[in-house]
Structures are given as C-alpha cells and as structure tokens.
Amino acid sequence: MIEIENLYKTFGRNEVLSGLNLKIEKGGIFAILGPNGSGKTTLIKSILGMVIPNKGQILVGETPIKKNWKYRQEINYLPQIANFPGNLKVKELIRMIKDLRQMPSEEEKLITLFKLEAFLDKKLSTLSGGTKQKVNIVLAFMFDSPLLILDEPTTGLDPASLISLKELIQREKANGKTILITSHIMQFVAEVANEIVYLLEGKIYFKGTIEELKTKTKQNNLEHGIAAIASTPANV
Image 1 (cartoon, one colour):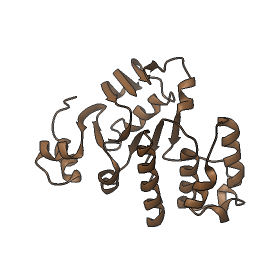
Image 2 (cartoon, rainbow, N blue to C red):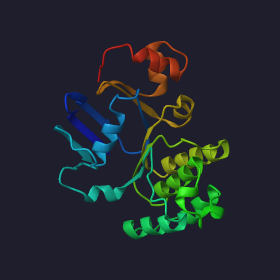
Image 3 (cartoon, rainbow, N blue to C red):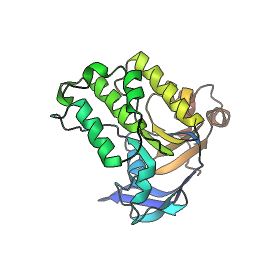
C-alpha cells in the first residue's frame, strides 16, 4: 500500500529523515510513534505530498507520488491541528469539503454518532477544542477512501467520543482500509494498533507487532517496551 525508499529530508542543517525505508501492507492499523522531533509529522506530510523530500521515493498503491496529485483522492487525512476558517458554520464547512471532494459521503451518520446536531449552525470560532476535533473526525471519515491518516486523533475527546472513535477505526479496518495513526497515548495505541513503527532522529528503531516489541525488549507492556527500544540502535 505504501512503500518508502531511502527517504531523506532536511530543514536547514537539521536532518529530520535519514535514509528511511518503510513498507506498509494493505489493510490494518499502523501506529507511527516517536518523541517530538523524531520525524513523524515530516514522514506523514511527505506521504501526503505536503513536504518534498530531498532524496528518496514514496509509492502509494505501487504508484510513485512525485508529480502525481491524483493519489491524494484515495486518502482521508485528519490533521493534528485543524485551522478551520472561524467565520464558517459547521454545516458550511462540511458542505464545502463535500463540494471539493465530489465523492459520496456519509456525514449524517457521523454527525449523529458524535452528537453534533446542535452545533451545525454554530460558527467554528465558537466551538470548544473537543467539539472542533469531532468535526475534524467527521471530515476525515465521511468519504470512502482506502487509506486514512490520523494525526493525534484523540486530542480533546471526551470518554464517550473516544469510544466512538475507536469503534469507527475498527469498522474501517474491518472494511479493508489501511490506517496510519500517530499518538502519544500508549493505551489508545495498545487498543487499536496491529503494528507499530517507532521513529527516533529520523530513523526506524522498530517495526512490528506490540507482542513482538514486548518479546524483544522483555517488557510486559507497550509503554515500557517503547522506553526500552528507544535506547537501542536503529535496526530497520
């Protein structure tokens, strides 16, 4: 589904991605983990075409993405921070995104799931952070695309909405979708992810299942396994 070959990216003198190689198979939930500055956001934005690497190649669905924008039509993206125009109403934003994508959508089911009916006529500038995140989730899931990229999707969510999000993610997985997730919440990652990819200083330190990580590090949970792997040399 996604293949990354020898990827380098620098910002000034700062090398953010350093010869990164990664293959994500079709179907399943993959958590991209790492501390701040590890290269997670740069990797995701490179896949989305929002950052241009200095060197290397990215293929999505066996097609190189360089000079090819059409592949983005097959991706749903939830950014970590959604800077919506504050003067728009929620229903206006949803309609605008539908007009841009020109694809069948199921926003009504999602609006009901996250109890957003009372907010549709409210301006985005008046919403709380948690409500904005629910709107963000609706926009990310309302189209039927084979690849979803979710950057810190749990931010600001109340417990009921978090349960709904996890159920939604599992439903998309059952439908054969490939889902990339970044999160600092290890309990959430442990509950939803099939595999994890741990980045540090622009290199992959581990790729595999949570059970494989615990076996390798001789730890009994994900959080301690991540702490242990962070102190070992990159090996992928």
